[in-house]
Amino acid sequence: MSSPEQPIHLLLVDDLEENLLALEALLKREDVVCLKARSGDEALELLLIHDVALALVDVQMPGMDGFQLAEFMRGNVNARHVPIIFVTAGSADLQRRFRGYEAGAVDFIQKPIETDILRSKANVFIDLYRQRMEILAQRDELEAYANALRAADRRKNDFIAMLGHELRNPIMALRAGLQLLERQSDKNRKADIQARMEVQAHHLSRLIEDLLDVARIDQGKISLQRERVSLQSVIESAVDTSRPKIEAGAHDLTVALPSQPLWLEGDFTRLSQVVSNLLTNAAKYTPSEGQIRISADVVQDEVRIDIADNGVGVPHDMQGRIFDLFTQSKGPDDRSREGLGIGLALVKQLVEMHDGAVELASDGPGRGSCFTLRFPLAA
Image (cartoon, rainbow, N blue to C red; front, side, top):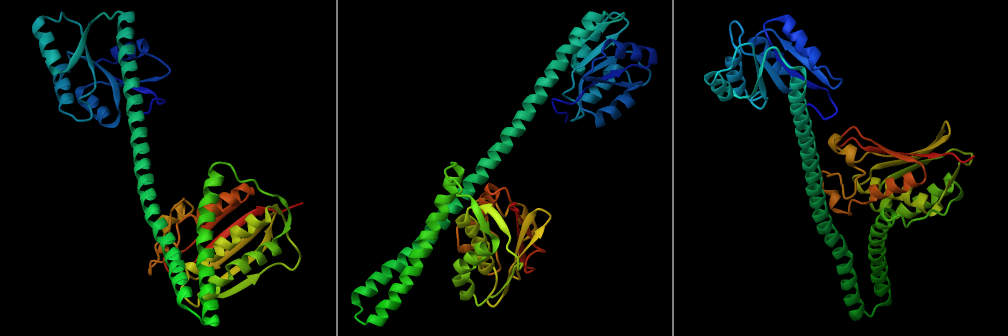
């Protein structure tokens, strides 16, 4: 199917080459391509390849005449919509006109052809074809938009279900802790319960902060407190923040950083949040006693940070949308139930606010993942 910007094809059918050349000269336009056929069979072959806006068909041709060609076109799903103007040298009596219109003709033109009349009629069908193509293009755009809305609605419903699940767990744990504290008299036992409640409260606070951060970024309400910060201090802070999650999974964490300081221009808290989110993500999607490695180096004028693990990996069909909001990779033990699917989306938004980029590399399920961060090196 032609788009509104592509040339429009007209089909000219006549057994005489000089007639075809004359018609082509009369209909010549920059946005029009004339397809010439010397027989009905040639015309049908061209109709199999091209979408045609108008066919000008000579009535009297050896073999398959114009009426027979029109009947074949009406039986062809690709050509039945093509308007046909018959070109005839003889007088078109009522019977011949009736047969022509019955075969699908929209008009008859007598030879010798009047140039202005032919051009005027052809322009009408060219404009109608353009309009039809524009309507079809708009239909396709609306269909794609509707599909996107349906997908967004499904993601929203999934997110609401996950949000309810994620908020319910810490709230129930806090309620249970309060009930235990009321009945508990042992000080050591109370301290243990309070510590567990603090963990749940921190988890609940982190979920809410991530939600608010996504909303703030979308509304343009986050402003970075830019300053000159060392990469080593950012990573040290991120490791400290994510250490409880790493230790809970009994993972082996390796940190490999250059000995000389590397400097960035950015918001220390947000940069630490980015690295911490990726470390926590690695711990979450890596089976117990896994391997996590964070390393950094300078590549040309950029700081490159790699956070790699030997965890569940990411399927190839998900790697292109892993940074989309509410998207989660499905692990074999369904680790995706933990979290709301906003961590990586938040990472991407914060990285881009620092004029950086984030990429994912994974060889597929069970092959681990490596997230690469790139930031401009401070002068």
